[in-house]
Length: 183
Length: 188
Image (cartoon, rainbow over all chains, first blue to last red; front, side, top):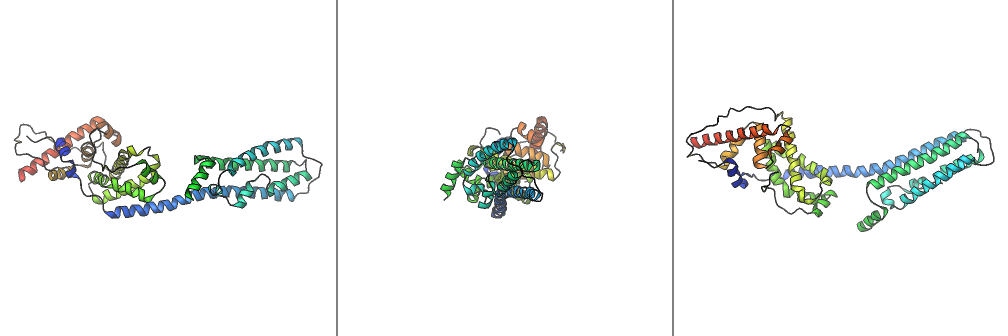
């Protein structure tokens, strides 16, 4: 009586094994992986470019607002309206708070050049121009709306940058250590 | 998987090696590949029954291993994890070839009883050759159960069929193998 097939296979398991795959399988795989890694390098670049794109978008929106504002003849009045002062305080505090966290990250992690970083600051050229326009035209609703929109866009951009940084689950300190270790 | 020892290469895979793979270290990934490619290639060969398909499937499976290595919780489970990816890729290869696991692919198997069995003996070559002749569905179930050591419940989940179907297919496959090997014995 022959033994059971299951038992036979268990007892001769290694004899059923064939030689491993041809070395060209690894060669092909390595090519794929290298190509993938090249692609993977593009992803962080895209992410960084996303920051840049967002900053550029902010610049374009601001530039549009400025063009609109400066192309109109405005009536001058004496000072900021109370609601503008309130908005200034609210948004300035929020923006500065987020900037403080973002600026704690090393420049390499942020992936922003100095011009882009400067644009992130609260009192950039766009802000200064808007502020000046508003000082000259404190009652102009369009300038007020443009300033608020400027604040909101900036806050939104900073939030998204922070989300991106935090999604990497690293703190500024860890990131610094990581870069120091790499160096 | 069933508790019995599996046939995977026992090369020590450490958390450090897995971490290096996660960080895109190709040399570390090659170490992982070297440790498992032999056993995994054999799975692909058995499942696809074709060298070209086996090679393609192995390559695709390891690309997925590389892509998803961050999902691996610890080095201790790497063996079963890679094996499952490879088996899933083999099943996909078979599905692309329109292999339907639910299809009974009825093979007329008459259970012979009371026949003269004294000259009947198994050999590795005869068993391998007999398995090769099985219809895809039967061979898949038999391979997954006998060689890859999955339980009928696991096989039924992988193939999307009932457990009773996998058991029936396995019994029929086994009987068919026995008959083929017996015939080979008789013609020697």
